[in-house]
Length: 371
Ligand code: UD1
Image (cartoon, rainbow, N blue to C red):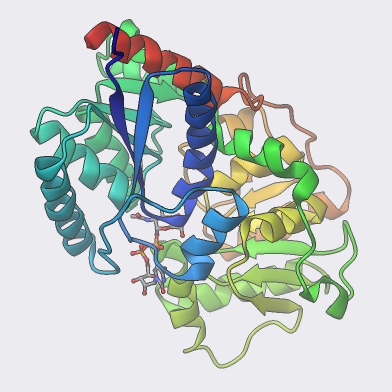
């Protein structure tokens, strides 16, 4: 008897996608060695293309070379969306797949989901159902559009499940699997390593901060950004603040006359070095969403400079707190941290390192029954 092979496109485009696809690929490869029938084709859209934003993650996380690179590069939201759709549609027309698996909420996620679904290739969305309610963030639009045309919802939390149910998604299309980012974190925790500048700057565990900022609302105007940085510089009481600078943020920083003296500007860090810094930081100050999940699992205090979060469990269960974007809110929060009054947090359900196994098992069942 010949077994039919089912081809899954795995889409990755931007930095936060790479740690989410790595464990899924590893789980698929392991199943295939055991005779599993699922094959994958790794499609990199090229949304992020620098070694620092992309290549380093492939190397460190053992992700194979993409089978296809759509090489779309940078552009406005519409330019990027359109370029990805046109190129991915062409790929599907030339060589169709049986399922398009997208992860997270970046532009590549939405663009490939649309192109696939319009060709009647079913879509599975990893990290489906999360919502911030903030339509000014491109990621929220990406989440809503993607989930409107997703067949199979692979979710990280009960809140996401409830959001989907409220939107009328049937129970049999929701798969509460957990968090693939945490699979990657737990698989790599023992490999985390100090960056080269650790010794040079005499950093000591628990005696420095990590800062990441790249949301347009925080970094695209230099006056607002400068006020935030001044508040961070003052509130952190002279401890070093390690600031890996995203390319978008670097553009605004170049226009600024002076910066707080305890800010240590560094290049975007590879995965193992970045999470080493997070694990040993006194606290993390960020406007990212994904990092708040990692700080929750590593039990590191996290101050989020946003007014909303699509990951409420990092606040209700984990170590995260929403501080907002008003610079005056930072000092009182940091004072509580220095007073030792930050919550310790707990780990959300199914953030246990086994999510990718659950995803592959769910996909095997689904694709076997739809073959
Ligand atoms: C994207 C994601 C965001 C994610 C972030 C992480 C969307 C809508 N946003 O935002 O959710 O948190 O990635 O990094 O998909 N650039 C480079 N090199 C690169 C890539 C980008 O220099 O490899 C520069 C370009 O000037 C580009 C800018 O960074 O215009 C922004 O890149 P883009 O992919 O548009 O969005 P991000 O802000 O990175």
